[in-house]
Image (cartoon, rainbow, N blue to C red; front, top):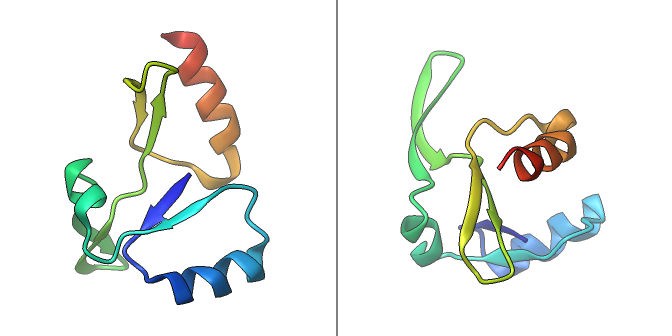
Amino acid sequence: MGISPDDEKKHSKFIEKFTLPFTLLADPKMKVINAYGVWGEKNMYGRTYMGIKRTTFLINEDGKIHQVIRKVLSKKHADQILKAWEDS
């Protein structure tokens, strides 16, 4: 699953445009985002702003966080997930 602070209308357009192979959840009140601690200061091209820190939480069948990937590399993310699961 993915999650962002965008509303459901924005999500629908994004899901259609990119044909996402996973569920995308809307969290406009940022309850889950804040609970997982993934909202914070970011820097891009010398500009500082607040936003989602791309993070992957691997959650086991008991609902417990098994592993956290904080430096998500888009093109290598599937490999990052498999390695993180195997390494722990």
